Image 1 (cartoon, one colour):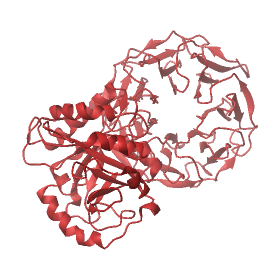
Image 2 (spheres, one colour):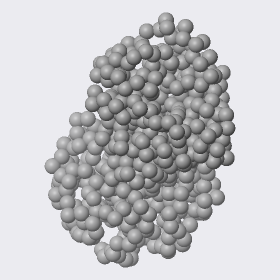
Image 3 (cartoon, helix red, strand yellow):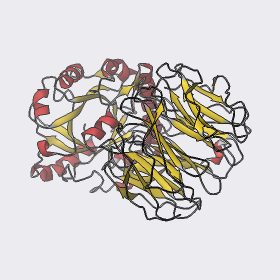
Image 4 (cartoon, helix red, strand yellow):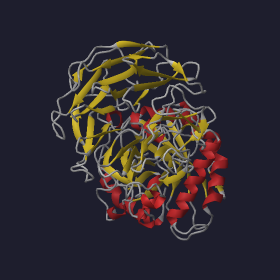
Length: 605
């Protein structure tokens, strides 16, 4: 990848790089290369992989008049050698409109963009800023190209998040709207690939629209075993697992959305979900228990479709939605004034923290007795963190460690004890359930993790509710697919629990329970059975009803969410096998009868 400007920069950096030795076999950050017809089709990819380089993009096209003859053999041979491979387009915004160029690239690359666990998301090489066709700005050109590729891939059954390559200085031609795409930044500054950053030594650091980087082109004159001549060398900002989760194409039919629901301060339910375009959408009742608005985009284009959404309410009633974006950062968006769901009443989506987590990390929101919201997530280091408002409706503390060693994708459940202390639950690597809780109401000190036992899957969904007498009760599935529950022996007895009791039924181990409280305080638990029907089990006169069929046809690993209408009627939401979002509701508060399933529309997984 060269432009006249970059040639000067590369020669200046070469003296520094020539004296630096990288040991790929010892690298913690995965190393890669990018190739074109300059290196040709005779690359020995087994030698490249053996030298410690695990990923590569190969040039496919340039503008609408050039196809790289080496693209197809490099794709096939690289993947055969175990190297993650992707294709890139050298952008010519000075000559061609973005949709025409995207179509030209897709015609060549699409047979090699597969959800095969070997394919990197397509990349746009943005280096030419000498004219503009078919767009209002260079950023607009980029966004049109990337959105076209995202749509083409989805139509082919593949989910991608395009990668955008540019240099630290050329990023100045763009703007923050391109933060929707995975950032690949070029700047061979002489820094070590394992410890440095493309933004550390550059005169153009103010153009860091992404707030970070995912891939860094750290060398323009690399020598790599198996590749003729010199080659660009790259490094991924993470480990092998996070590279796979953030850079590889996935199947459009695999992930299921994880909708969430909350009640606005004026009594209306509002549902949030992530669409195929990686946008956040919402759909809200126009009046309490009334008709629905239809799905409205809240923007971004950067959320993994299966991302865990979490919604909470500020002390003043303003809803706030949290999610992990495709960069692995935690973002939020919130109502400016309580009670209105209009688009103009929501803020722009903003980063809550620059710390990175897994793009599939689960989020959970708790609420202190004084109305402070508390957000929980597991970091890439396996530690549980929380971020809390420093005062009701106030600013955020930044993430603080609560300790432990957990799977990055472990589920987190949060509830408040009767005394107002927040309590959090996770399944550990041993298969046991653990809890941790505040040592004082509204306090920042926590007890530490307490072992509640069990033989569970780390990936299980946990669901916790509070009984009418104040005792917390938690529900989950064992490794044998049987549902279990456990409860506090008395209200606020965080370290004294009943032990596990069989909750009945026979379920797939990836079924996801959800629990809610009826208006009278009785708990009600929901699970999808192996017939695809939804079942519920509810408290009645001090005991449980047993599992009752609510019908429907669902996939077992779909995650439902439950809201409570102003009238007290429970309402449940989940995706049907026809990909639209379905809902059903109690015919009256505390009722054992439910409506039939109705569609809220949309096209989801």
